[in-house]
Length: 445
Image 1 (cartoon, rainbow, N blue to C red):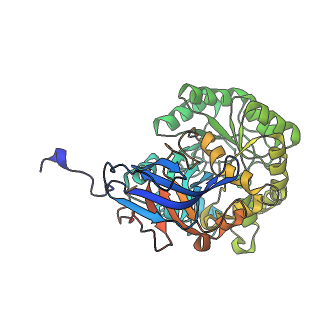
Image 2 (cartoon, rainbow, N blue to C red; image 1 turned 30 degrees about the vertical axis):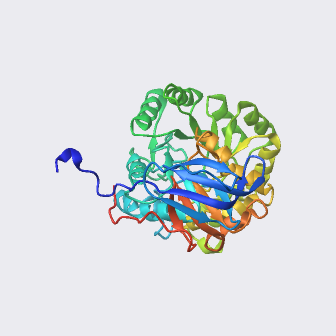
Image 3 (cartoon, one colour; image 1 turned 90 degrees about the vertical axis):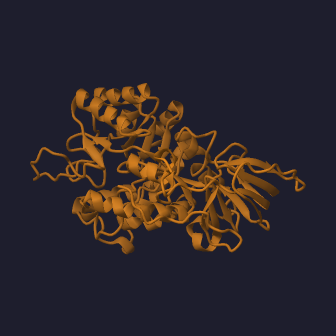
C-alpha cells in the first residue's frame, strides 16, 4: 500500500442510516410536540422528519440501515452549553491549584471532561477560554469522544484585569496566569495582536474581560476594564475576520462599556438592570448567564474550592442577583443562552443550571436557550438546535417530555436514553440503541 492510501487509524467508519419510528419530536421554537413521527438520519444529518408511517426508503449511500422503534419516546435537539472552560479540569482541591495545573496535565484530563459532557446530553459547547484547536480537531477526527466545539482560545484581559491571576504582591511582568487560558494585553497594538493571534490559532470568536470578576485578586467586581479604544481595536479585528467578540461583564457599567464599543455577547451579567437590559435588546446582543457556577461555589459540596477571602466576598455579591437579572433580561426581550462556567470538580453540576433557571423562566424558554438561541449565537441557526431536515443529526432520546419538566435533564442516568451526534450514537443507556463510538486510547495534545 502506498502512503497515499493510508488513513489515520482512528478514522471513524461511515455513519449508519437510522430510521427512528414512533418518535415524539420536541420543537423548541414553539414548544409543540410532533407525535408519531419518523426521523431518518443519514450521513450525519437529519434527512427527513415525517408523520407518514408508510415511507418509501431510498437505498442508503453508505454504511448500514438501522430501524429503531422509539415507542413514543421523546426526541429533543442536542443541548448546547454556551459557556464552558474545558481546560479547567477536575482533580485539584481548589481554584488556585486548578488554574495553576501544568498544561500537559490539563490536556490529558480534557478527554474525560468531553466524554462526560456528551453523556449529559451536550452535543455542542462554546469554550470561553482555554480549549485549543488541537482538541477541537481531535474530536472532529474521532480521536476522542466529545461535543462539537466552538472556541475562544486564549481570552484577552488587561493588566490587573479579571483573567490576570497575579496578586498585589506579585511583581512579575509575565504573564498573568496560565498562558493557555488567557493573554494580558495593554494598549491598542497589543490588543490588535492578541485578537489577530486568536484568529490565527483557530478561535471561532474572541472573548475579552471588560469588568471585575470573582476570581481576580487585584480588582473589584465593579471595575470597568479595557479602554474604549482597546475594545474597538479588538472588535474591529473580529468583524474583519467574520466573527464577533463576547465580554465577561457583571455590572451595568461594564456591560454598557462593552456594547458601546462593538461587543455582541455578554457573559454572566448578574448585576444587570432594566435600562441596560433594554439596551442589550435594542443592540440584538446575546446574554449567557451562568447561575450554577455561583450556586455550586457556595454549596457545602465544594466548600473551600474558592478559598481566597476576596473571592468569597465577591461570590456573595453576585450569587443572589443572578436569577433576578435573568428575569429582567427575559422581560426585556434579550437573546438568552444557556451557560454554566463550571471550573474544576464543579463541572459535574453542568445540568443543575436547568433547575435554577426554572425558578424564573418557563421550560420552553429554557430549552430555547440551550438549543435555538445558542445556535444563533454560534452562527449555526440553520444547522444546530432543531430536529429538522438538513440539520445536524445531534439529538437526544428521552423517556419524558422536557417541556413538562425541564428538570429531567438533571437526571440523565434516569431519563436520557441515548445521545446522537453527527448521526452516531455517542452514548446509550437503552438496550435498543447500540453505541457507534468507542473512545480510542490515543490522547492528542
